[in-house]
Image (cartoon, rainbow, N blue to C red):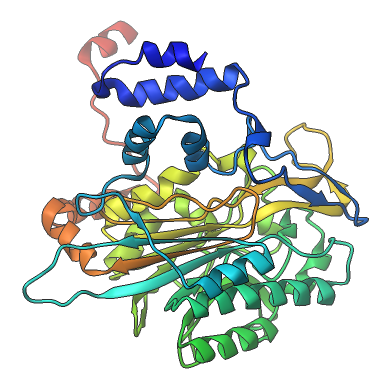
Length: 450
Protein backbone atom coordinates (compact mmCIF):
# COMPACT_ATOMS: atom_id res chain seq x y z
CA UNK A 1 0.00 0.00 0.00
CA UNK A 2 2.67 2.51 0.97
CA UNK A 3 4.76 1.78 -2.12
CA UNK A 4 1.81 2.64 -4.29
CA UNK A 5 1.22 5.86 -2.39
CA UNK A 6 4.84 6.93 -2.69
CA UNK A 7 4.89 6.42 -6.45
CA UNK A 8 1.89 8.74 -6.70
CA UNK A 9 3.45 11.34 -4.43
CA UNK A 10 2.59 14.92 -5.45
CA UNK A 11 5.06 17.79 -5.34
CA UNK A 12 6.13 19.52 -2.13
CA UNK A 13 3.54 22.28 -2.50
CA UNK A 14 0.93 19.70 -1.56
CA UNK A 15 2.99 17.92 1.08
CA UNK A 16 0.65 18.74 3.94
CA UNK A 17 -2.36 17.07 2.30
CA UNK A 18 -0.15 14.23 1.16
CA UNK A 19 1.17 13.58 4.68
CA UNK A 20 -2.39 13.55 5.99
CA UNK A 21 -3.59 11.13 3.32
CA UNK A 22 -0.57 8.90 3.81
CA UNK A 23 -1.17 8.52 7.53
CA UNK A 24 -4.91 7.98 7.11
CA UNK A 25 -4.49 5.34 4.41
CA UNK A 26 -1.81 3.61 6.45
CA UNK A 27 -4.18 3.49 9.40
CA UNK A 28 -7.05 2.22 7.28
CA UNK A 29 -4.79 -0.50 5.90
CA UNK A 30 -3.81 -1.37 9.49
CA UNK A 31 -0.16 -1.02 8.58
CA UNK A 32 0.53 0.81 11.84
CA UNK A 33 1.14 -1.88 14.41
CA UNK A 34 1.62 -1.17 18.09
CA UNK A 35 4.16 -4.00 18.22
CA UNK A 36 6.52 -1.85 16.15
CA UNK A 37 6.85 0.63 19.01
CA UNK A 38 8.91 0.28 22.14
CA UNK A 39 6.08 1.39 24.43
CA UNK A 40 3.57 -1.25 25.47
CA UNK A 41 -0.11 -0.47 25.77
CA UNK A 42 -0.61 1.16 29.16
CA UNK A 43 -2.09 -0.66 32.10
CA UNK A 44 -4.61 0.92 34.43
CA UNK A 45 -4.85 0.30 38.15
CA UNK A 46 -8.32 -0.79 39.24
CA UNK A 47 -9.64 0.17 42.66
CA UNK A 48 -8.85 -3.38 43.82
CA UNK A 49 -5.25 -3.23 42.62
CA UNK A 50 -5.77 -5.35 39.49
CA UNK A 51 -5.17 -3.95 36.01
CA UNK A 52 -6.84 -3.79 32.63
CA UNK A 53 -6.00 -2.43 29.19
CA UNK A 54 -6.53 1.32 28.94
CA UNK A 55 -9.16 2.79 26.68
CA UNK A 56 -6.77 5.54 25.68
CA UNK A 57 -8.60 6.98 22.71
CA UNK A 58 -5.91 6.33 20.09
CA UNK A 59 -6.67 4.44 16.90
CA UNK A 60 -3.20 3.01 16.49
CA UNK A 61 -1.67 2.73 19.96
CA UNK A 62 0.83 5.50 19.24
CA UNK A 63 3.04 7.16 21.84
CA UNK A 64 2.75 10.64 20.30
CA UNK A 65 1.81 12.14 16.94
CA UNK A 66 5.46 13.05 16.36
CA UNK A 67 6.61 9.46 16.88
CA UNK A 68 3.71 8.13 14.82
CA UNK A 69 4.90 10.17 11.85
CA UNK A 70 8.56 9.42 12.50
CA UNK A 71 7.87 5.68 12.52
CA UNK A 72 5.80 5.62 9.35
CA UNK A 73 7.08 8.31 6.99
CA UNK A 74 10.19 8.26 4.80
CA UNK A 75 12.87 10.62 6.21
CA UNK A 76 12.34 13.31 3.58
CA UNK A 77 8.61 13.45 4.20
CA UNK A 78 9.06 13.28 7.96
CA UNK A 79 11.33 16.34 7.77
CA UNK A 80 8.65 18.27 5.89
CA UNK A 81 5.91 17.04 8.23
CA UNK A 82 8.02 18.16 11.20
CA UNK A 83 8.44 21.62 9.70
CA UNK A 84 4.68 21.96 9.33
CA UNK A 85 3.92 20.38 12.70
CA UNK A 86 6.57 22.06 14.88
CA UNK A 87 7.38 25.28 13.03
CA UNK A 88 10.75 26.98 12.63
CA UNK A 89 12.79 28.83 15.26
CA UNK A 90 15.33 31.36 13.94
CA UNK A 91 15.38 29.64 10.56
CA UNK A 92 15.87 26.13 11.96
CA UNK A 93 13.90 23.34 13.55
CA UNK A 94 13.77 23.38 17.35
CA UNK A 95 16.81 21.30 18.18
CA UNK A 96 17.13 18.52 20.76
CA UNK A 97 19.46 19.30 23.64
CA UNK A 98 21.65 16.70 25.38
CA UNK A 99 21.35 16.19 29.12
CA UNK A 100 23.96 14.66 31.46
CA UNK A 101 24.18 10.87 31.30
CA UNK A 102 23.38 10.75 35.00
CA UNK A 103 19.99 12.34 34.31
CA UNK A 104 19.17 9.80 31.61
CA UNK A 105 20.07 7.11 34.13
CA UNK A 106 17.69 8.67 36.66
CA UNK A 107 14.90 8.74 34.07
CA UNK A 108 15.49 5.10 33.18
CA UNK A 109 15.58 4.02 36.82
CA UNK A 110 12.36 5.86 37.66
CA UNK A 111 10.69 4.97 34.33
CA UNK A 112 9.84 8.40 32.97
CA UNK A 113 10.17 9.97 29.54
CA UNK A 114 12.93 12.61 29.32
CA UNK A 115 13.16 15.11 26.46
CA UNK A 116 15.07 18.38 26.11
CA UNK A 117 15.08 21.09 23.44
CA UNK A 118 16.43 24.57 22.75
CA UNK A 119 14.63 27.72 21.57
CA UNK A 120 16.96 30.40 20.22
CA UNK A 121 16.60 34.14 19.63
CA UNK A 122 18.49 36.36 17.23
CA UNK A 123 21.65 38.01 18.63
CA UNK A 124 21.09 41.62 19.71
CA UNK A 125 23.45 44.59 19.89
CA UNK A 126 22.08 46.11 23.10
CA UNK A 127 20.93 43.11 25.17
CA UNK A 128 22.72 39.91 26.12
CA UNK A 129 20.80 36.63 25.76
CA UNK A 130 18.34 35.86 28.57
CA UNK A 131 18.40 32.09 28.56
CA UNK A 132 16.23 30.28 31.09
CA UNK A 133 15.97 26.50 31.47
CA UNK A 134 12.38 25.45 32.13
CA UNK A 135 10.88 22.04 32.91
CA UNK A 136 7.39 20.52 32.82
CA UNK A 137 6.47 17.36 34.74
CA UNK A 138 3.55 15.07 33.89
CA UNK A 139 2.75 12.07 36.06
CA UNK A 140 0.27 9.31 36.81
CA UNK A 141 -1.01 8.39 40.25
CA UNK A 142 0.90 5.65 42.05
CA UNK A 143 -1.55 3.72 44.24
CA UNK A 144 -5.13 2.54 43.66
CA UNK A 145 -7.72 5.12 44.66
CA UNK A 146 -8.90 2.77 47.43
CA UNK A 147 -5.61 3.20 49.29
CA UNK A 148 -5.56 5.53 52.27
CA UNK A 149 -5.45 9.17 51.22
CA UNK A 150 -2.27 9.79 53.18
CA UNK A 151 -0.54 6.87 51.45
CA UNK A 152 -1.75 8.02 48.03
CA UNK A 153 -0.39 11.52 48.55
CA UNK A 154 2.89 10.33 50.03
CA UNK A 155 3.48 7.98 47.08
CA UNK A 156 2.84 10.77 44.58
CA UNK A 157 5.07 13.16 46.50
CA UNK A 158 7.95 10.69 46.47
CA UNK A 159 7.54 10.18 42.72
CA UNK A 160 7.51 13.93 42.08
CA UNK A 161 10.49 14.44 44.38
CA UNK A 162 12.61 12.10 42.25
CA UNK A 163 11.49 13.83 39.04
CA UNK A 164 12.27 17.28 40.43
CA UNK A 165 15.66 15.96 41.51
CA UNK A 166 16.24 14.95 37.88
CA UNK A 167 15.21 18.44 36.81
CA UNK A 168 17.59 19.92 39.36
CA UNK A 169 20.44 17.72 38.12
CA UNK A 170 19.65 19.02 34.62
CA UNK A 171 20.06 22.64 35.71
CA UNK A 172 16.38 23.54 35.39
CA UNK A 173 15.60 27.05 36.68
CA UNK A 174 11.79 26.87 36.71
CA UNK A 175 9.65 23.74 36.86
CA UNK A 176 5.86 23.45 36.70
CA UNK A 177 3.79 20.48 37.88
CA UNK A 178 0.38 19.37 36.61
CA UNK A 179 -2.99 20.50 37.98
CA UNK A 180 -3.83 19.10 41.44
CA UNK A 181 -0.68 16.99 41.32
CA UNK A 182 -0.93 15.72 44.91
CA UNK A 183 -4.07 13.63 44.31
CA UNK A 184 -6.18 11.67 41.83
CA UNK A 185 -8.39 13.95 39.75
CA UNK A 186 -11.42 12.77 41.68
CA UNK A 187 -13.74 15.70 40.98
CA UNK A 188 -15.64 13.57 38.48
CA UNK A 189 -17.10 11.53 41.36
CA UNK A 190 -18.87 14.42 43.14
CA UNK A 191 -17.95 12.66 46.41
CA UNK A 192 -16.97 15.18 49.07
CA UNK A 193 -14.57 12.85 50.84
CA UNK A 194 -11.90 13.80 48.31
CA UNK A 195 -11.83 17.24 49.93
CA UNK A 196 -9.50 15.65 52.47
CA UNK A 197 -6.69 16.16 49.97
CA UNK A 198 -7.07 19.94 50.32
CA UNK A 199 -4.29 21.64 52.27
CA UNK A 200 -3.28 25.13 53.28
CA UNK A 201 -0.89 27.14 51.13
CA UNK A 202 2.00 26.25 53.42
CA UNK A 203 0.91 22.62 53.84
CA UNK A 204 2.80 19.36 53.47
CA UNK A 205 3.35 19.49 49.71
CA UNK A 206 4.51 23.11 49.85
CA UNK A 207 7.02 22.28 52.57
CA UNK A 208 8.54 19.62 50.30
CA UNK A 209 8.58 22.01 47.34
CA UNK A 210 10.26 24.71 49.44
CA UNK A 211 13.05 22.30 50.37
CA UNK A 212 13.61 21.26 46.76
CA UNK A 213 13.42 24.83 45.46
CA UNK A 214 16.11 25.97 47.87
CA UNK A 215 18.26 22.90 47.25
CA UNK A 216 18.29 23.34 43.47
CA UNK A 217 18.02 27.16 43.29
CA UNK A 218 14.80 26.56 41.38
CA UNK A 219 11.41 28.25 41.08
CA UNK A 220 8.63 25.64 41.47
CA UNK A 221 5.06 26.12 40.27
CA UNK A 222 2.94 23.79 42.42
CA UNK A 223 -0.81 23.39 41.66
CA UNK A 224 -2.72 22.03 44.66
CA UNK A 225 -6.20 21.78 46.13
CA UNK A 226 -6.15 24.66 48.62
CA UNK A 227 -8.08 24.90 51.89
CA UNK A 228 -8.31 28.56 52.90
CA UNK A 229 -8.20 28.32 56.68
CA UNK A 230 -8.76 32.06 57.18
CA UNK A 231 -11.93 32.19 55.10
CA UNK A 232 -14.22 29.48 56.41
CA UNK A 233 -11.99 26.67 55.10
CA UNK A 234 -13.15 27.43 51.56
CA UNK A 235 -11.59 25.17 48.94
CA UNK A 236 -9.89 26.51 45.82
CA UNK A 237 -7.99 25.15 42.84
CA UNK A 238 -4.74 26.99 43.43
CA UNK A 239 -1.18 27.29 42.23
CA UNK A 240 1.56 28.08 44.75
CA UNK A 241 4.64 29.80 43.31
CA UNK A 242 7.75 28.98 45.33
CA UNK A 243 10.89 31.05 44.86
CA UNK A 244 14.42 29.76 44.42
CA UNK A 245 15.21 30.64 48.05
CA UNK A 246 12.47 28.34 49.31
CA UNK A 247 10.09 31.24 49.86
CA UNK A 248 6.44 31.48 48.82
CA UNK A 249 6.25 34.26 46.22
CA UNK A 250 2.48 34.09 45.91
CA UNK A 251 -0.52 32.11 44.73
CA UNK A 252 -3.09 32.17 41.95
CA UNK A 253 -6.54 30.59 41.87
CA UNK A 254 -8.19 29.03 38.83
CA UNK A 255 -10.29 31.59 36.95
CA UNK A 256 -12.53 29.35 34.84
CA UNK A 257 -14.27 26.28 36.27
CA UNK A 258 -15.61 23.74 33.73
CA UNK A 259 -19.13 22.41 33.69
CA UNK A 260 -18.81 19.85 30.92
CA UNK A 261 -18.90 16.04 30.93
CA UNK A 262 -17.34 14.54 34.04
CA UNK A 263 -15.66 17.80 35.03
CA UNK A 264 -17.80 18.36 38.11
CA UNK A 265 -15.31 20.71 39.71
CA UNK A 266 -17.88 23.31 40.78
CA UNK A 267 -19.08 20.73 43.32
CA UNK A 268 -15.80 21.38 45.15
CA UNK A 269 -14.66 24.94 44.35
CA UNK A 270 -15.72 28.00 42.40
CA UNK A 271 -14.03 30.61 40.21
CA UNK A 272 -10.89 32.17 41.65
CA UNK A 273 -10.51 35.72 42.94
CA UNK A 274 -6.86 36.52 42.30
CA UNK A 275 -7.12 38.13 38.85
CA UNK A 276 -4.28 37.47 36.41
CA UNK A 277 -1.10 37.91 38.46
CA UNK A 278 2.33 37.72 36.90
CA UNK A 279 5.08 36.62 39.27
CA UNK A 280 8.43 38.32 38.82
CA UNK A 281 11.12 35.76 39.63
CA UNK A 282 14.87 35.99 39.28
CA UNK A 283 14.56 34.00 36.05
CA UNK A 284 11.72 35.90 34.38
CA UNK A 285 8.08 36.94 34.65
CA UNK A 286 5.67 34.01 34.77
CA UNK A 287 1.91 33.56 34.73
CA UNK A 288 -0.23 30.47 35.29
CA UNK A 289 -3.38 29.81 33.27
CA UNK A 290 -4.87 26.82 35.05
CA UNK A 291 -6.43 24.09 32.88
CA UNK A 292 -9.86 25.17 31.56
CA UNK A 293 -8.64 28.75 31.28
CA UNK A 294 -6.83 27.78 28.09
CA UNK A 295 -10.21 27.73 26.30
CA UNK A 296 -10.66 31.46 27.06
CA UNK A 297 -8.53 33.74 24.84
CA UNK A 298 -9.02 36.77 27.08
CA UNK A 299 -7.55 34.82 29.99
CA UNK A 300 -4.35 34.31 27.99
CA UNK A 301 -4.45 37.98 26.92
CA UNK A 302 -4.65 39.23 30.49
CA UNK A 303 -1.41 37.50 31.50
CA UNK A 304 0.28 39.06 28.48
CA UNK A 305 -1.02 42.53 29.33
CA UNK A 306 0.48 42.10 32.80
CA UNK A 307 3.88 41.40 31.28
CA UNK A 308 4.27 37.61 31.35
CA UNK A 309 7.21 36.14 29.45
CA UNK A 310 6.29 32.52 30.20
CA UNK A 311 2.77 31.26 30.91
CA UNK A 312 2.22 27.76 32.26
CA UNK A 313 -0.98 25.80 31.64
CA UNK A 314 -1.12 22.99 34.25
CA UNK A 315 -4.02 20.76 33.24
CA UNK A 316 -5.93 17.53 33.72
CA UNK A 317 -7.86 16.65 30.58
CA UNK A 318 -8.89 13.47 28.77
CA UNK A 319 -8.68 12.30 25.19
CA UNK A 320 -12.34 11.90 24.33
CA UNK A 321 -12.99 15.50 25.30
CA UNK A 322 -10.05 17.64 24.24
CA UNK A 323 -7.15 15.87 22.55
CA UNK A 324 -7.67 17.44 19.08
CA UNK A 325 -7.63 20.87 20.75
CA UNK A 326 -4.55 20.23 22.88
CA UNK A 327 -1.74 20.98 20.38
CA UNK A 328 -3.51 24.11 19.14
CA UNK A 329 -4.63 26.22 22.08
CA UNK A 330 -1.37 26.78 23.96
CA UNK A 331 0.52 27.28 20.72
CA UNK A 332 -2.01 29.84 19.51
CA UNK A 333 -1.75 31.66 22.85
CA UNK A 334 2.03 31.85 22.53
CA UNK A 335 1.70 33.35 19.06
CA UNK A 336 -1.10 35.79 19.86
CA UNK A 337 0.51 37.09 23.06
CA UNK A 338 4.23 36.92 22.20
CA UNK A 339 5.30 34.80 25.14
CA UNK A 340 6.40 31.22 25.79
CA UNK A 341 3.84 28.65 26.93
CA UNK A 342 4.38 25.40 28.80
CA UNK A 343 1.34 23.11 28.56
CA UNK A 344 1.22 20.23 31.08
CA UNK A 345 -1.32 17.41 31.26
CA UNK A 346 -1.46 14.48 33.66
CA UNK A 347 -1.17 10.97 32.28
CA UNK A 348 -2.87 7.62 32.84
CA UNK A 349 -6.39 6.39 33.60
CA UNK A 350 -7.66 6.73 37.17
CA UNK A 351 -10.35 4.32 38.37
CA UNK A 352 -12.55 5.12 41.36
CA UNK A 353 -14.35 2.77 43.78
CA UNK A 354 -17.89 3.96 43.07
CA UNK A 355 -19.28 4.30 39.53
CA UNK A 356 -20.69 7.71 38.60
CA UNK A 357 -22.63 9.29 35.74
CA UNK A 358 -21.96 12.28 33.52
CA UNK A 359 -25.51 13.60 33.21
CA UNK A 360 -25.39 13.06 29.44
CA UNK A 361 -27.30 9.79 29.14
CA UNK A 362 -24.20 7.62 29.03
CA UNK A 363 -24.05 4.60 31.35
CA UNK A 364 -22.34 4.91 34.69
CA UNK A 365 -18.59 4.36 34.73
CA UNK A 366 -15.74 4.29 37.23
CA UNK A 367 -13.03 6.18 35.35
CA UNK A 368 -12.72 9.70 33.98
CA UNK A 369 -11.12 8.56 30.72
CA UNK A 370 -7.50 8.55 29.62
CA UNK A 371 -5.37 11.53 30.63
CA UNK A 372 -3.18 11.69 27.55
CA UNK A 373 -0.14 13.59 28.85
CA UNK A 374 1.48 15.10 25.74
CA UNK A 375 3.04 18.05 27.58
CA UNK A 376 4.98 20.48 25.39
CA UNK A 377 6.46 23.96 24.99
CA UNK A 378 5.52 26.58 22.42
CA UNK A 379 7.36 29.78 21.56
CA UNK A 380 6.08 33.20 20.44
CA UNK A 381 7.46 32.62 16.93
CA UNK A 382 5.04 29.65 16.45
CA UNK A 383 7.72 26.99 16.92
CA UNK A 384 7.11 24.24 19.45
CA UNK A 385 8.63 21.06 20.80
CA UNK A 386 7.38 17.52 20.25
CA UNK A 387 5.07 16.33 23.02
CA UNK A 388 5.88 13.98 25.84
CA UNK A 389 4.35 10.51 25.79
CA UNK A 390 0.59 9.85 25.91
CA UNK A 391 1.23 6.99 28.35
CA UNK A 392 4.31 7.62 30.45
CA UNK A 393 5.38 9.93 33.24
CA UNK A 394 7.64 12.55 31.76
CA UNK A 395 9.96 15.52 32.17
CA UNK A 396 10.37 17.87 29.22
CA UNK A 397 13.03 20.58 29.42
CA UNK A 398 13.59 23.61 27.22
CA UNK A 399 16.20 26.33 27.10
CA UNK A 400 14.45 29.50 25.99
CA UNK A 401 15.95 32.90 25.23
CA UNK A 402 13.37 35.33 26.59
CA UNK A 403 14.66 38.00 24.20
CA UNK A 404 12.54 36.22 21.60
CA UNK A 405 9.39 37.68 23.18
CA UNK A 406 10.31 41.27 22.33
CA UNK A 407 11.76 40.27 18.97
CA UNK A 408 8.44 38.76 17.92
CA UNK A 409 6.55 41.82 19.20
CA UNK A 410 8.79 44.05 17.10
CA UNK A 411 8.42 41.86 14.01
CA UNK A 412 4.68 41.21 14.02
CA UNK A 413 3.36 44.19 15.98
CA UNK A 414 0.37 42.33 17.40
CA UNK A 415 0.31 44.51 20.52
CA UNK A 416 0.83 47.70 18.52
CA UNK A 417 -1.94 46.90 16.04
CA UNK A 418 -4.45 45.66 18.61
CA UNK A 419 -7.54 47.84 19.17
CA UNK A 420 -7.87 47.58 22.93
CA UNK A 421 -10.06 50.69 23.10
CA UNK A 422 -12.61 49.10 20.76
CA UNK A 423 -12.52 45.78 22.62
CA UNK A 424 -12.93 47.55 25.97
CA UNK A 425 -15.92 49.55 24.72
CA UNK A 426 -17.61 46.44 23.33
CA UNK A 427 -17.07 44.47 26.53
CA UNK A 428 -18.31 47.34 28.67
CA UNK A 429 -21.49 47.55 26.60
CA UNK A 430 -21.90 43.76 26.57
CA UNK A 431 -22.05 43.72 30.36
CA UNK A 432 -25.04 46.06 30.39
CA UNK A 433 -28.51 44.46 30.73
CA UNK A 434 -29.79 46.38 27.69
CA UNK A 435 -26.91 45.40 25.40
CA UNK A 436 -27.79 45.14 21.72
CA UNK A 437 -25.42 43.33 19.32
CA UNK A 438 -24.01 45.43 16.46
CA UNK A 439 -25.74 43.64 13.59
CA UNK A 440 -26.34 45.18 10.16
CA UNK A 441 -29.25 43.42 8.47
CA UNK A 442 -29.66 43.10 4.72
CA UNK A 443 -32.55 45.39 3.69
CA UNK A 444 -33.96 42.68 1.45
CA UNK A 445 -34.34 40.41 4.47
CA UNK A 446 -36.41 43.11 6.16
CA UNK A 447 -38.64 43.45 3.08
CA UNK A 448 -39.17 39.70 2.87
CA UNK A 449 -40.20 39.49 6.51
CA UNK A 450 -42.70 42.36 6.22
